[in-house]
Length: 276
Ligand code: 13P
Image 1 (cartoon, rainbow, N blue to C red):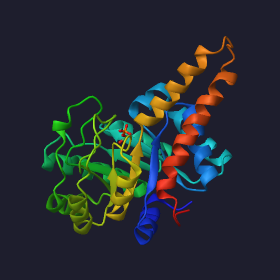
Image 2: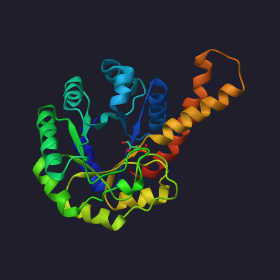
Image 3: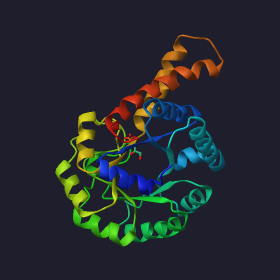
Image 4: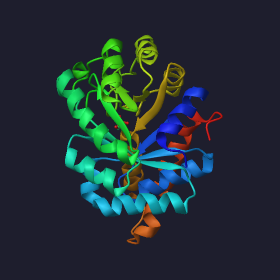
């Protein structure tokens, strides 16, 4: 498997992106890997601090590594939205392929300083580092919180920190949208021209495929999707449980796994060009 840094270079040549999907348990992880296998496409599997607390770090690592081997899929393990340097250090040491330091709520200078520390930690292990500049509203926060990424700041930020990937604020937000979001593709193009970092789009749930395709053309290399996964999994379980008294969870979960797999297969079609 290529390193993620090598993958960014390949994606730059192809002008394409990789999907990064959050997993929460074995079931959602297997949905992601089955979809990637079916489509013969690589994928990034993401865990947040909450998922690591839920599963335990050793289980998160062991599960991700053994599952990607079992399904024979190129799948980079990424720590999503970390603010805690200790957790980042543990993940790097444990064998994550990639980490995100999210210091986007800190002022610009402090964001640079915090990010520099993580790059220093990650470099000897050749672990990919993603940071966020500007602000992508978190789940449940008002869209007013979005602070758009400025191209000149992005240029300096990437030069100074040496990050491999940069999450940009161009109009997306975490969680579902009340109305169709409008990505600022012109701004995205300017950020792409200003910096060599792989640009990351957070808040991928609910953005129509045609907008995602345009964003890839303008330089997005990683698209994050989480909310739609949770929503589909729980929605499927709820309806399944209404029609059965079966208590064998091995009979109950497969339908939800399959529905999430199909959702991800559709998302993978967005990047399914010559990207395998
Ligand atoms: P959504 O939950 O809106 O899909 O965003 C996912 C994300 O950006 C994870 O970092």
